Structure formats: structure tokens, C-alpha cells
Length: 98
Image (cartoon, rainbow, N blue to C red; front, side, top):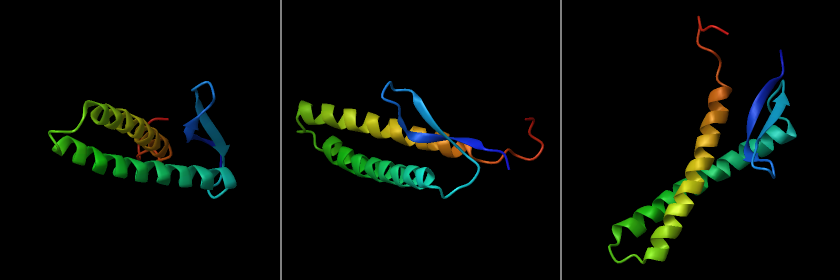
């Protein structure tokens, strides 16, 4: 089996994507990436729940609305990276060109 690149759920200090070259699942970095993705998805669910509370309150202060928007954008970026990483690891559909 050829080694494949896995998009990791974190960036380099320069903000560039990080990849793991692996030919198997279950290695230390793969497990760390899985755990990080799980935490990111959980944080997204929690941020969405809090955002709904803030947005449902017409008296929410501007600073709280702004913080909520910032947090939601951070979580969305994390979730999109997880989706990209998982999508890249899906097998090609039958008959798809390589």
C-alpha cells in the first residue's frame, strides 16, 4: 500500500497546512490528529449552542456578539479543515479517473 498524505488539524507556525505521510492508521500522530479533530468538532457544537443563546437575546451586548462571531469563524475554519482532511481520505468512486 502506498503512503498517503493526511491533512492534519493544525497549521505550521507560518500558518501553512501540515500533512502526515502514512501508510497505516493508528500511529501516534494519526491518533493525536483524530483526538484533535474530535475536540475541534465538540468545540464547534458548544460554540454554536452558545451563539444561539446570544443571538436569541435581543439585549446581547455588542462585545458579546462580536466575540460570538469571532469564535464561530474559528470553529468553522476548524470544521472545514476536518471535512477537507476526511474528504481527501475517502476512496475514489469506482470508475473515477486518477
